[in-house]
Each structure stands twice: as structure tokens, then as C-alpha cells.
Image (cartoon, rainbow, N blue to C red; front, side):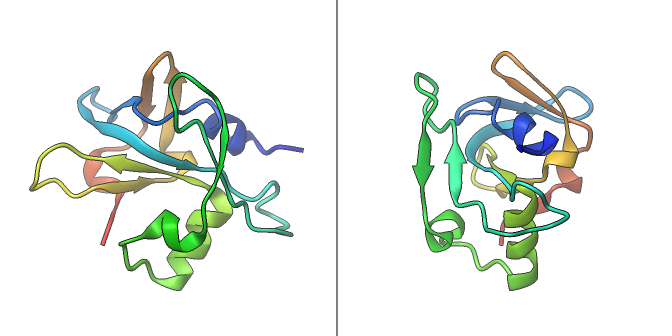
Length: 127
């Protein structure tokens, strides 16, 4: 059975606007990775991304290398991201680093908008 976090992540698609807790737009969804079906009892690694095309809901297969490339994510952090699932945020501008968003940092998903319960500074910055 699909976990609550995966249900939330499955509503998110590439290109959706992301807002922080103060309702400031901080970027766009670049990629969505679902987590294991049951993070408390991981039996397999989720290897599917959902909703990367706004006009179609489709599953895309990508290897771990492709998901995190060209980032050098430490193994422990990579395992946590894959276990719980994540959004990769594309932040605007050259000086703004892209970020990873965990499902528990998401307040709501409505329409073409993802609202976070945290500030941009609290998100995990991509290496």
C-alpha cells in the first residue's frame, strides 16, 4: 500500500511553482522521486519518478546515477532521499543553488502550486 508521503509526492509534477512558508516563490519542481512503499520496513528501493510532464502523468525510470548527477551526494543522505522520496527544486538565478525537498517539508499541493512548511534556507542545498 502506498504511504501518505508518496500520495502527496504523486500529486506533484515537473514545472509546478514552489512557495516557502512565507508564500514567496522560491523556484520550480525539477524532478520528483517517490520513496519506498513503507519507509519503516524498506524492502526495495523506489526507482520511479512521477509526473515529470505536465500534460501527462507517467512513470519514468532513471538510475540513481542519473537522478543525482552531477551532484556528489553522500551515501547516507542519498539513502535517506531515496527512502523517503524527494523533490528536486530548480531555483532561479545563477547565485541560487538548487535544493532537495523532503515530503515532510511540504505543507500542501494545490493546483499548480507546492507550498512548503519551511523556508528556502531550511532546505537541503544541492552540492
